[in-house]
Length: 74
Image (cartoon, rainbow, N blue to C red):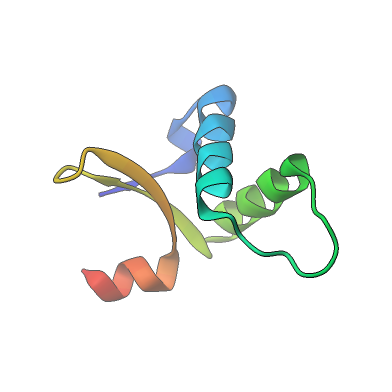
């Protein structure tokens, strides 16, 4: 189930994004990128519709996925 990011408080949204960024260990190239910059980048992807927040009832977990990837799984 997709959770609209606009339904979350700013603090909750930041916590979800930070958890996602820290667990994913996303590689940003040779240059170090701060956690704050990564959070901003993910927020931009959510706002543009390139990414979605997804709740899994089966796993009782929240994740952020590329919108195209989630739509292909449905």
